Length: 216
Image (tube, rainbow, N blue to C red; front, side, top):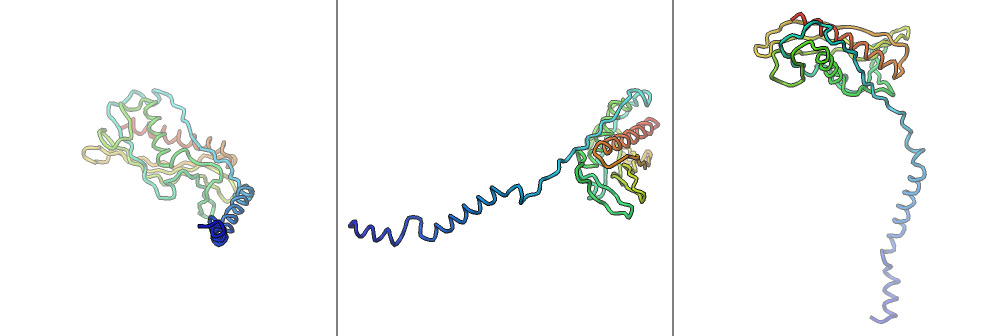
């Protein structure tokens, strides 16, 4: 191809195509806008605090360790409470989500872990675990409430309601039943108060469960 023909060819069909240049420019422009304005387009998130209650345990509080072993099944609950979200119940029965607090684990897991650790550390039984089989007895829990409750006056409390049933693992015969319903008043919905109230509720549940199991 002669030089003159090559120049004419290049003029008719530029490298990359004549239509590619505007598209490329538009993409670069959009990238620059998003890069410079990202902070204003996306709202800044408030920090989320994880509520990780730790229970005080007194070994021997429930007397001598019982010789039988226990499996604590994952507590049953409704889909809304099967979550790490901290729920707030309003006086008219609506459920809202705490904006900055989350349980360190979904509520059923949080309750089971607290009970397993407490019963182990308090030496209530020969062995306590969360496995599916291999234990003398199984504890089944229906977790009906686990939330912050606000009444008509604006007062707040960490509220928990549970129904626990103890079964012989081999025969599935029910050995006993324990009902728990408690509200621990808190001064505000701050994360610190939510932690304090949650610890108080779980400690009371664990101690009552320990006393109850010690009788069986």
